[in-house]
Length: 516
Image 1 (cartoon, rainbow, N blue to C red):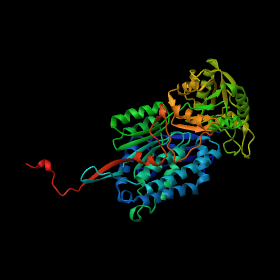
Image 2 (cartoon, helix red, strand yellow):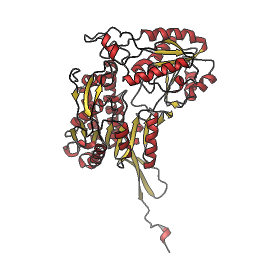
Image 3 (spheres, helix red, strand yellow):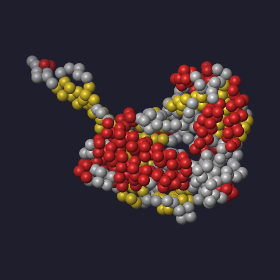
Image 4 (cartoon, rainbow, N blue to C red):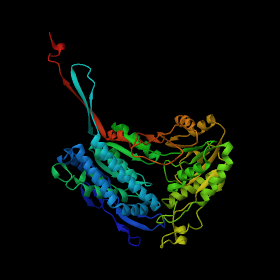
């Protein structure tokens, strides 16, 4: 556990060794009050090369390469057990890394354990196919691991994002090099520690799983991430992050003919229909935009409300937003913690100023809190935290058209635009008039209407009378500038595999073509 008064120096797992990376020392902060909680060395291009080359050697060692699917499943179950055994410690470390409320951090840790458990089941039950005969031969389609893959993860939900890449890659038989966000490296390193411990005696013949199978390389994306994507032995990149960086990765991957999955930005619409249960809709919209302090790719940041219920919905929504508890992440009472950094809060404030300049009217928020909510933790110093922590109030605008910048660009903060609509044609046109297409939400009592709307929305996920709920068994991803490829779901293991076809000739006669 981190000592907030004495920052922890963290080493990482690189090429089978727990050591410092080769670059300069840097520090990470606790967004609650800006205090340094950890120091570590950034990785370099040479670290990337060593990690990838050792990962390639590790995946070919018999201790890993000869594991049968049910044995890989046992290894993944051991990882899940290791996460659960340290669940509270991991939740606390996640909180220190990015300032999420502790209740949310506990949920993310539980999700990570469940992800490894799920893919253990997937690999144990995964089947190849004997394909239908088209002649005098038998044909089989088999899947093999791609090789060494790279995982590049974001700062907003590290442990869940890293598990969603690590678990299917290991289940498929790959080796993995992880590049966590520079400012939130702790969860990837702790997952590597759990994987390392789980691998003792779990390899083929009772050997240890090779330590170099997983490496974690903290540091700047422009250095570590770029080198990882360009490395000739990297066979796939799984990336979650910003659209601009994702497009750059796609360009580099195209030069290598390398597959990628890209989960990028969002500007997700939520729809409140005329017949919606307003109590449920208000609660769902508040959760969809203001949980995680809006630092979520699927945040429902554009809310389209039928004109007939607009005023009633607005009154309830604003009242609910003002009542949200903005406070110390360590308190189980807290609903909204701080933003990730001072720089990011400044960016949110610039968007709010832009919304005002574009003619928007603030219904609530639009400022830093004067004080934090009452806490149930003894060490909460609200005056210090408000002054030093990176807090911003839940903010709601009205009066902006769907073409306003605030309604078109991802803010990644607690800012919502309320927009009335007249009919379904108007609604669908506005919802789809955006470069992003990650998620959407619909609130209505009419499930036939919900299905019709959902089919018309250009998004990868549609939530109906709920929002921001997930299943590891259900595919997730976006369209348009929100990305390509899918994570989660039974089929996602195949993204880390390549297919190989076998043909057995059954004819007793030689090929007649060669006869004279």
